[in-house]
Image (cartoon, rainbow, N blue to C red):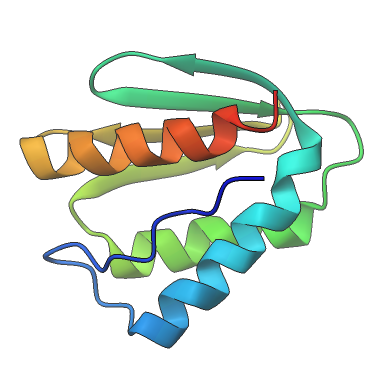
Length: 105
């Protein structure tokens, strides 16, 4: 399994240790990835039935706090995680996350 790059992006408020913790949480979601859709500015990750909702909520809440340059939301009913960017930096992060979550497929 590929690791999420542990490089703190400009504007991200996580410490290196916090980023490592977040990468670990995201890695625990990989077995539940059912579908991945990506455009240049957006990533949509659909999770299978049985995904750990508390873990998804923790990943989303952490990303929302630390990366204000991304739009991040999760629809629990559809089990759909949406990550969107509006600038070059955000698009780079979306690309890294797409590569990371794509490893699960």
